[in-house]
Image (cartoon, rainbow, N blue to C red; front, top):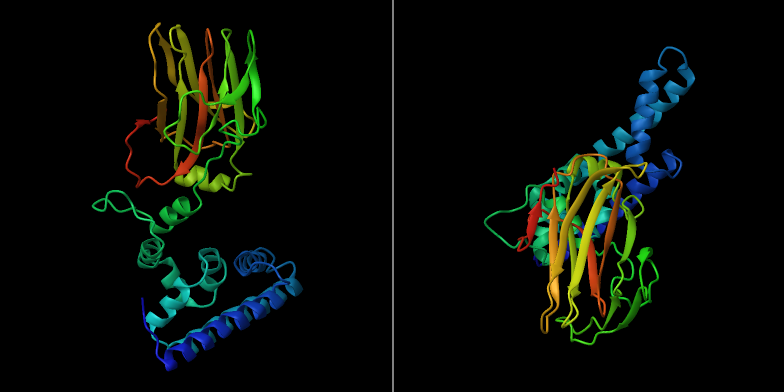
Length: 327
């Protein structure tokens, strides 16, 4: 971390104001829209309609030329500012603002934002590091965003809201119910579970990846790993059956891949502990738009399941679980 002199602080203040002024100016020129998309639109329109719609082409040329001139002017003003100071400014701004705003100000700032060093340092300062330091991520920016915004995509995974958020597929015998854990869970914050019956009980959730913030292009081009986890406990003294399967679906909700990673029968036995099932899926191909998670089972006094999760996660994580190619 840098320690700034008074002069450095003046630089930071002036450059922050420069960002603000440039962004406001760009927004005025492009009607409040995102500069990147609008510059592309203007440029494409100018090339497409050069011979047929001269008025619009000329207007687009003026707007684009004005943007380029401002970027060049910014570059000239910024040349006197040490790059280390600029880098510190960027590291102290929110990541989304750096990508969506600061990166567009001028060429020097774009190069800093696009550099692996910037995202590696941002990961370091925020404590986001790969488990194996000898195998760093290929893309530090992707690693940052996947790590920073990683979350469980399943709703109500711990039965805290009854059966809300789940679609019942099969509801045999005494049906699905929820209850407090009769056997303590390894994580003491997990206090409730779902319980099947002696007839087969299955429930599922359908995850819309686009609604969760993962665009079509992101899923098709980067194909991040998908981590599935579930916990179950069989009844003591009775035979039981636990099942888990996952489907990757296209836009029309047709299966692209169906993965049935776990289908387990337990013989009559004594006291069983909570069991965790974890799989990581990769190489599942393009076109994945939805994930269907289905689990359940049956046993004389019911299978207990809880703390289920589906996560989009970085590839630089250490996997203690099985990795499925799903091919």
